[in-house]
Image (cartoon, rainbow, N blue to C red; front, side):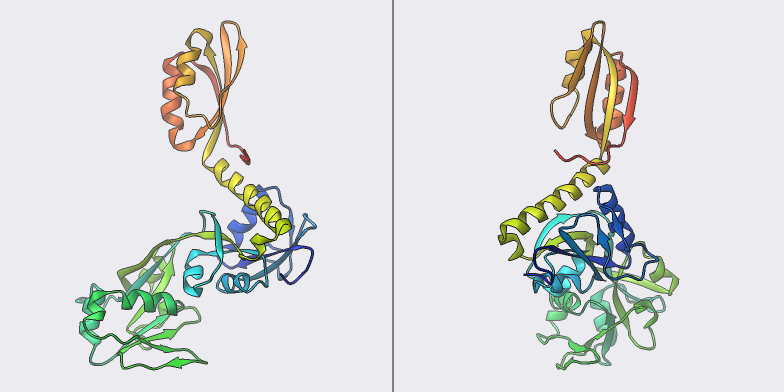
Length: 320
């Protein structure tokens, strides 16, 4: 299994996920050459000689991993759904978040939902430009406002494949710049966005949320996970990444606490494990890791107990 036997084949995404993926690798203590934004290499090199890297578009990664061309990869959850890929999602990497939205020109002031869009154009035909053919089809056919008009699937149009139905809705494959398609080439679009800025700047408005959130995922080929050596190697990479994610959401804190207040101090700490304590007589030093969301509350309580010399650090990784 995999394009290079005896090594773990790992496919990385190019595009908007690339910068955060490189950062994740570096924070996970992996050194990678040839994967920067300015690099033209499609075969970066990692300092782990047991791992072979390749770079592909995020859209391709789920299929290539499912087919076993690569053992693991990083891609967006939206592309896993779009590909209907039979892979294992190992970790939500919590970056590269996008939403997938249905938008129409602002000029259609009376159209504020899919139902109203269908009403407006049903007799003339509705062209929807999108990179997400399967996801869009599933969303539209799942809407009651569409099903009460027809039980036919939308027509699918690509340069190399057409599936023509009696439905007046046509899903037309877009190769980018999707927001530029209306009104000449489409009545609506279904596209991903981070902030919605590009949609607004192209005089479009959102009328439906097709997918509320999609983030980067670490995915694996199911057969690769059945191979003991590959499963162990995949687990090693997954542990490194999840250690980075946990560290990003945590603070490592040191504080001096009056020894007489030590019992009270340890009771308020939501530490990941037992609190490390150095008894120094009148004062004791405590060492603990807490979620960032609880930091201010815990510090407030520690100061109420007389804690001093409180130091906060951001750990690089939390492995265990």
